[in-house]
Image (tube, rainbow, N blue to C red; front, side):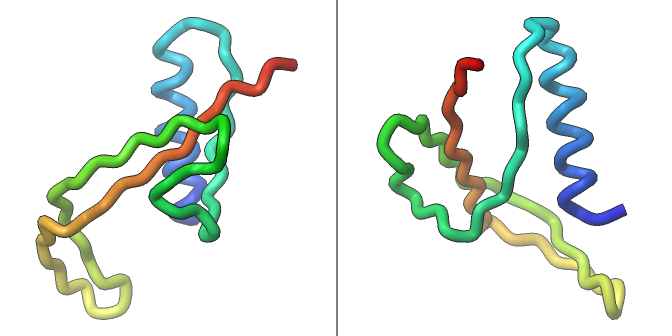
Length: 76
């Protein structure tokens, strides 16, 4: 299973737990900047995370992780 599929599955589980019936789509975009496009909400979190190398299985921690979300509600 690809990493983006795992993120999407977890994301969809959390959305479903809200029980609101909203439809959300997780779409990675490498073009995003910290200042979001007009009309989008931006949520930024500085976090502590654990990383592992898929080739050698070594792991390390980092406190320099930036998680950035841009979101908007598209009405059908």
